[in-house]
Image (cartoon, rainbow, N blue to C red; front, side, top):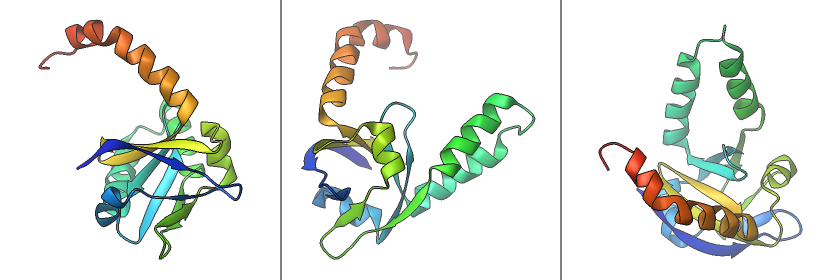
Length: 141
């Protein structure tokens, strides 16, 4: 399971080092795509195949399904992990997540999200303030 938060840098070329804690589970190559929120979602190959299966089950006749499928797949990139544990985040994904220099890797069970640190701080503060109400609305928690 991928969990925890790790602060890293993204260099001017878009390279970043994956947290050592995640590397064993990620393997030699990952798939990165736009995140639902303003982040980059990074999947181990075996988890990406599950995402593909779910996308293929969506009704293509529905415009929202088509839109989700098109955007997720059009922005998906296979990224090899180099010997230094680095990946190169494509410009399209850096732009989507507004990735600057300071970034955070956030483990979210089956994938990692890469956030601009400032955006993460703003997002997590909003969620933390609403946490009691969120927990109240989620059944089974």
